[in-house]
Image (cartoon, rainbow, N blue to C red; front, side, top):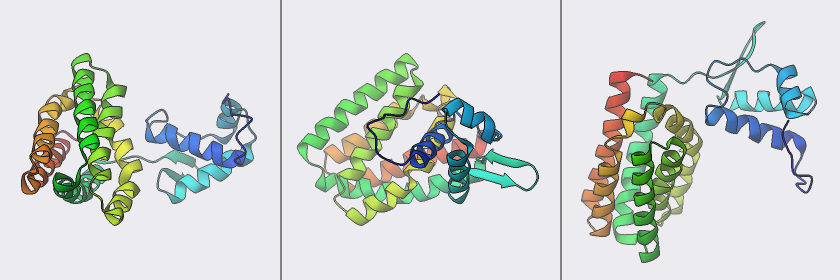
Length: 218
């Protein structure tokens, strides 16, 4: 049963929706799992109505598939889906890195270095949750520092899909082996103010992920 904060004045249906959405994005509800209204309602300690509303909303976002006479399922994510996400991410984050090389503030640079070290330690420790947390933050700092609100908004729209991708990606730890070195190349290019090198490093970083996904599948 979920422990909904009684001080939280948001509608129950919103909290149920956000909880189910996060469970799908983080893989707690794995792709292909049937979304049983009765079971979910019992687990969350709510009626079936907010569960049903949440499932319909998640269907519109592509996170749930509703099949006639069969029910609702957490959507599968295919190799093609992941490649498409990476293609869009590659272009936008490469541009963000290009801008960040000349626009990143000293305090953002310090945070980027700190997060990079924490990420490297997470890889050394084999801590998947920390890898996801610090990988997400590493790229977010670069995006935030690009100082282009339109680009930031466009990348933000991708973040939920990227989060789901990261949980699938990091499920195979071996895929993270080269990430610290690739992050360091991006970081150094930004630190040196080399916009072209930053964009190229970011591009190569995503390109290698894309090639790996194509080669090995989800």
